[in-house]
Amino acid sequence: MKRNLSCLVGLLALLAPLTYASQASAASQKVEDYQSCLALVQKNPTEAAKQAAAWRKAAKTDGALVAATHCEGLALSAQGKHEKAAFLFFDLAEAMTGAPDAERAKVYAQAGDAWGLAGDHKQARRAFGYAIAREPDEAEYYIGRARQDALASDWKAVRSDASEALAREPFTIDALVLRSIANRKLGYPRASEVDINRAAETARHRLDVLLERGRVRADLGQVAAARVDWQDVVRYAKATGRADAPEAQEARKLLDAE
Image (tube, rainbow, N blue to C red; front, side, top):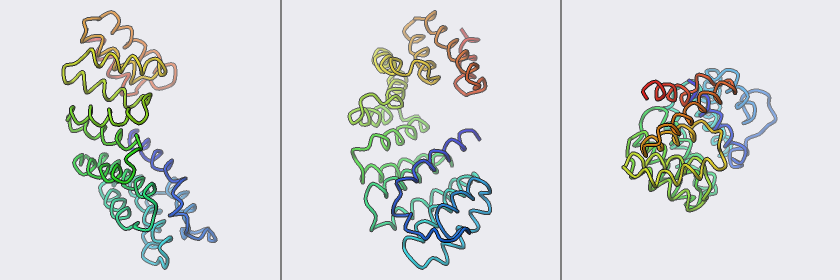
């Protein structure tokens, strides 16, 4: 559930630049405009999906149709109906032929996120591929596809996509962590060490960075240093009210296993 909520937050964050969708009228306080629909998604996603679907069917302009469809997808995702949301997002991106590539790419990426949450990593990777085709210089879409590669345990693909992201934004922490994991899984802990140390230089308190650095150090035989990293994961997680974070749970298991 935590991951679902964080995904929704990420999806909502992408809405600000979605100017094509914002053509819908903001005159009414009902779900007949984009902002009121978004507000209802956060309060009552079930009702938001119902009203957005009705708005979509009654839409008389392209802008209203785009806004209603997009909001309906967000509402479905908020309910955990990720597969249905993914199809809506993907079909919407396909239909947005008059929109700038940057906006279409965002919606394709949202389809990828939703399919990933639905467990369909093949479709998720496909959707991110469409986003990349429209915005090939945007590191975030390579990172999105790399995450799906990781969920499918395709470590060579993870390394490739993370490398593409880093070629565009060399200090992106998520990409550094993903490539570190990929190289470690592929049997190259020294290469992993380079990436995870770079990540730790600027994100020394990030739980995923510390967890991964501990794993890399353990693979290199640096057991004492690995334990320090995992202990720090548990300590920082507790200090920031995240004692039950997945990284903290995994760190405790690794400490118990050593």
